Image 1 (cartoon, rainbow, N blue to C red):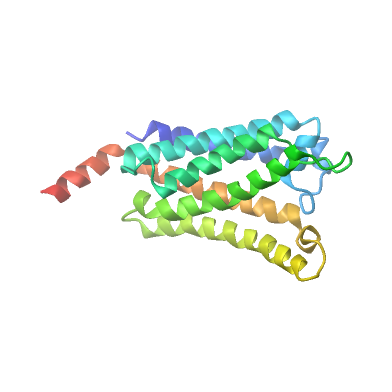
Image 2 (tube, rainbow, N blue to C red):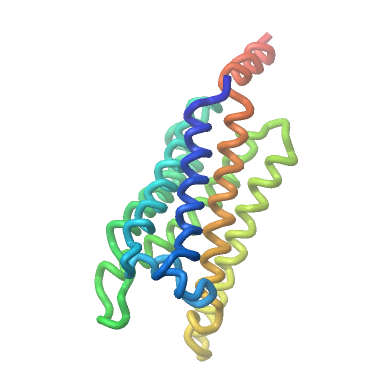
Length: 220
């Protein structure tokens, strides 16, 4: 019998992703450039409730995924992977609680909190997946490589932002003009969530009974 918690994680993550993608095609958010504008721009429109709902679904799916990993793979609750996963989940909640800066009004403390929560989120989840992939897929290198591959893609695209920031520090233009920020963020987010979904799928495919059986065999 598949892990119900992991299955719920997969379903919730997919629903959250589809809800976020729907913002690209329904008015008025369909007019927002997906290349230049970040996902958080949707929270400044009348579709904010859809944006918040998508983020909350992904946060719930993430929490379920890491909970399933602790339960069905024997990962310590205070392991680095789980702590990073918790950091990602909490960061998503902060992103919902603090809306990005509306630059037509001016800078805000909430906008600064939102920005740093986004940075923490985009770094913590790929690292969490990389650290936990071997535990979830001990004998499935293909699946393990897929999870880590999605994470590597997310981190690589985040590296473009870091490069743009360093470039700005040495005298070039603003980093947010150096990269197509909206596109970069969307690729990072999609790859990161795909990495976590891959982990949850692995937990669905190999429930706890299989793990317990493997441990009994190894003990003998």
